[in-house]
Length: 395
Image (cartoon, rainbow, N blue to C red; front, side):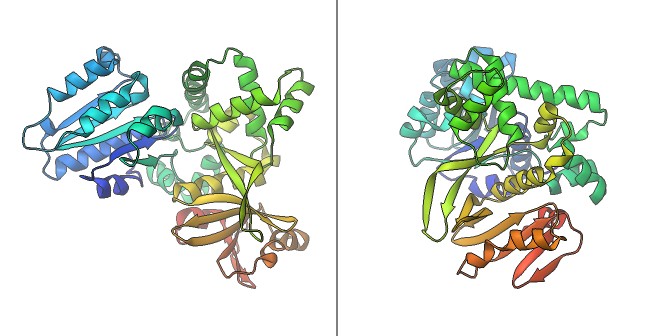
């Protein structure tokens, strides 16, 4: 079991008067993260009686899927004159769970951690009820560095497998490709049916799957709801722009898709149209689309995007005049610019990738992430191998 990079954040938040909300797609490692944190607590003087751990996917806890019953169960187990650490895993399964959580939160000596597989967890009543009293910890499948640690593979083998099979923790430990495919298929259909179709009352599963395939096939491309609807209609899946937009939003809520909005560097403003979307994991994309070697550039771009948001950056697609920069990454006032390309050894490609950088007037770092093995620095633009980038948070 690899120690996730999010563990330090949970440790740093220990005892804070905030509800810690761990979010992310199913099977990305949220439950394991909580177990690692609980082990840390036990190693640092916390008695097991101070930990209440409830996983709502366990049928043994079915009687707690009602918020009054949940509240009563937890309050009876609170420790007098000690902090009680409360872990509620996949808590969105409990209707009106926020009422129980809020009541527990206002008690003295409780430290609450909840997880969920849908962004709906932090919308509506919960956001209103707990405004200013929670902090979100978004969790993704394994980073490449975590993948290498877990599998013990050498750099090149690990990169080849990560590129193709993605970073779901358990899938990374399955050697048999057929079993791994079945496992990923199980994740996909569970998310599609439980976290998207059931929650949004979507009956046309076939159309929903068509939207997923279209979006996975267009990672890194600018898309609009009209473009999605027109494309699906041309293939015999007639739908409207409104329906396409609703489905894409539902997929983003379930953390299957991530949206990168556009930002005009010269105009210094966010643009509210023509976003790009990225898939949560390359293993799921390979499951639906197969191995697409012609898509190396877009897969690479998707992996870089996920790594940037994993590192805590706000990530935007940049507009510099009539040219585009793949990513503007901003964190705590620090800005970095990234272009992503399979290779820039060809002069024409190099000029195309560097041209947007030359329109930028500031002096923030500028990188081209590529599969080329020879790093270089040309006019202040650093060309970095993708594996070096993934293994170094300084880039």
